[in-house]
Image 1 (cartoon, rainbow, N blue to C red):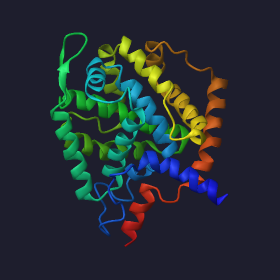
Image 2 (tube, rainbow, N blue to C red):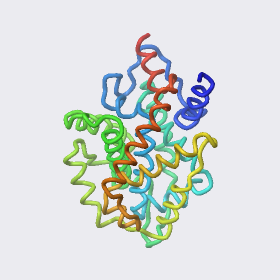
Image 3 (cartoon, rainbow, N blue to C red):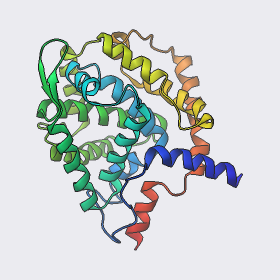
Image 4 (cartoon, one colour):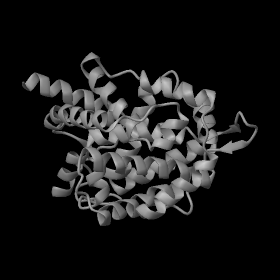
Amino acid sequence: MEALRTRIEASVISISRPPGSPDFRLPKGDPGLFGPDSPCWQVHSDFTSMLIGGVSALLLQMLHPLPLAGVWDHSTFQQDMLGRLRGTAQFIAGTTFGSSADAERLIERVRRIHASVRGVAADGRAYAADDPALLTWVHAAEVWCFLRAYVRYRNPDFSLAMQNRYLDEIALVAEKLGAVDVPRNLKDLETYIESMRPQLRCEERTLKTVELVLNAPAPNALALPFTRLMTRAGVDLLPDWAKQQLGMTPLRPLQRALLQRAVGIAAMPVRWAVRQSSAQLARDRMAG
């Protein structure tokens, strides 16, 4: 059992804390941007729901033609999806659980990368990754999906007040990256997402993104069934209008209930196995 536990934990850490991640144990007593009592620590500490939310967020983000063009033109997403996933996970973990200095370094690094990402989308419009409006869209889609996944798959009793606190806190990272008019509560977030729908469309490269996500590789053979299940849950997490744009049929109530049960069962050994998560190392840092 210990060998199995170690192997599961290693698979999770290979994604959630890749080489080059901050040392979450130092410096002692540094709360980082949010601190251990924050909703951000709570939501971002569950690997299963974050993976589901991440899949959903990527598909939702890529319905916007300009971020889609940026990813296709300036990243190795098509060739190295796991690398893209690790980079995103490293940023989220570092800005959530890292020290204040480590979080600021990660944010500055992403700002430098964004400054060089420019081009022209398939519809002829120019895009820039540091465009404040695009940064707001990418952030809003991401945190909306993280929150939906956490409530559905980890904590259905997460109150509206806590959800609003989470959105208010995590807006800080988006603003540090350059986003503007960031929604800070659930009502404003849902109003914003709805307002963006006329700008969203499904293109050829959107469908290729879906195909890549549905066939995403796993860190190893042991993790493949888990990865496929989390991907399916991420697709189901999308709002029905987004699924329809992507040509996907929403699950029936019984299918969704079975999926939620399967995810709950699959999550148990992962939650049991991971003892040295980024969140736990950060708690150890705070314990001094």
